[in-house]
Length: 254
Image (cartoon, rainbow, N blue to C red; front, side, top):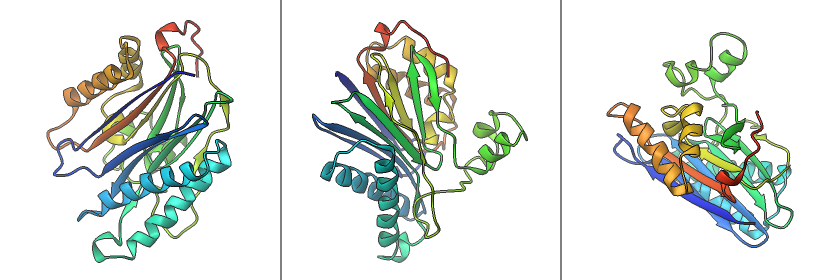
């Protein structure tokens, strides 16, 4: 199974980058992680890097692809952030989101999960097949009918989260069941610094016009820079292409 991977992580209009992303691949299984840290005074950097490094290390030690495995990886990363919080005053309030994708190269299946507002998108036929739901105040309001999805990108409280890593309370990652892959499937894991300025229609349009995963991310970055304010947030993304999206002729709606 051919996989094409591209990565992007920029500080945007901020003084430093509190996002982190990475991946680990093998003939058996592959894992991708994107995390958005918060906490100030360098704590956000530490939190995001702690999440990514711990999830990839634990997956590499046992590259099993299953929903319960993703949940376990995220919960273990939470414990790692809690331990890191206790090491200094600068890190005691740090938090982080996480989005995790796993692919089994043998069975040609995938599963994914997240916590916070770092998103996972799945495209099939260059159309959005799946979009994760944010663990945020505004997502809850939109789900309850108090406004439309535009509020997720524009409301002053759009970044207030209901769940994140770095909390001693019980957390419940949202994990998707294992699905069979098709040639042309595309995955995008991205922080709010990207999706806030790139709506789903623009993601689809840029994907349909792109010959490579790297070119697609460059197009998404151009959308961010065209719409973001001068002091805009860090933005990060991982793109995973299964085969060639241009070869996928069957469009399936979400």
